Image 1 (cartoon, each protein chain N blue to C red):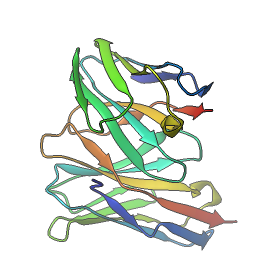
Image 2 (image 1 turned 30 degrees about the vertical axis):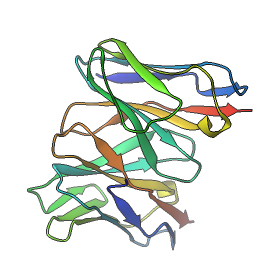
Image 3 (image 1 turned 120 degrees about the vertical axis):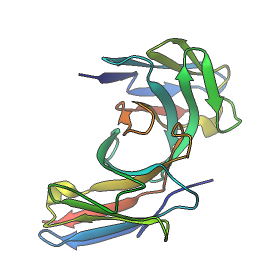
Length: 111
Length: 111
């Protein structure tokens, strides 16, 4: 069966520090991969999605970037974090036209 | 911009009552999905209904889709305290790659 791993679960980082969040999927190949951000009590904002290795689509121009170095690995990065980057980050995978499966999320607090 | 918008934003009911949540969207869709999120956790898929379907059931869940009105509803029958969570609708763009979420409905079921 397919599983998705996302880590770390929580992260506290100072302003200006770099960020790297990792997400890996098992049990499937060539999945569509997604990064979402959720502000407290709000819906999910689509940040990036990828339909294949090295293919990244950015939905919101901002301080973040994403990479897909391997088929089942999706990384969210920042060179210098801002206070506004705080939030709950969720990785998800899906096959086109089907339901999405989410990781447990990373709570990022930028201080 | 947001594709799906849920209504109401919050709902408080007694255990045993039915809960109805609505979702409206703006553009043509391939399918519409409903998800549940417990506080601080990832989202869990509940039901996916395709654009050529009008109604779908899963246990105590009933989802309807009206493409002419660009709206969907999620009905939870005989609610339980454990149903307390946030519920989100999500829609795919016609390419099937982008999944956009609404702001969610917070459901509180009182025991």
